[in-house]
Length: 232
Image 1 (tube, rainbow, N blue to C red):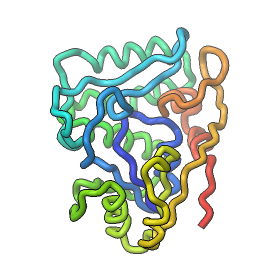
Image 2 (image 1 turned 30 degrees about the vertical axis):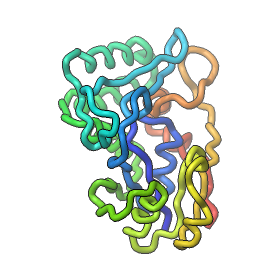
Image 3 (image 1 turned 45 degrees about the horizontal axis):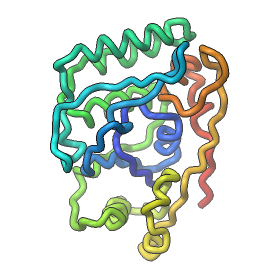
């Protein structure tokens, strides 16, 4: 069985959803520290003026606040601003209204926490794409170790039959493959090849939020998300 473990991100890029689609089990790593100016509460979209940032504010928190405890700030009308941005850049796209109708109720639900909003937004996308991978949260799984790699092993071992970890390329910086193999866990790093699709505003630009793909390709989006093959 294949497992993927990733921090919860705000309407993330295509490779994120590929990791979920190709896994038998997916875990949101929500008990690690929040990092500012990251993908947890921000992402990028394509506009007539180039790549632009989108996101939502969070309440001030200490340096070592776990993601699961980070709260969203509603001191500004960020939801209105977000949808004004999307309207200005994507109202001409084929599936604009369909996707707006899907995500708008989620964004305006006034969820308390960062993880909660990201989960429900990403879940709406997964349902739209018909990706049925079971999803769990690391904070719901007992922790008996403090080491980063040991925690990965612990999460893998929690699910009977998991013998492969499908992870992003950046994980090569800290994952000890030999150590995981000692625990009967093979590591496969994602080698994502971005399949071009028709976008607004000129030449194709990869690595945008999944919203860019959905607005332009709608129900055909899954064909552009899964490009890797996992060899057992």
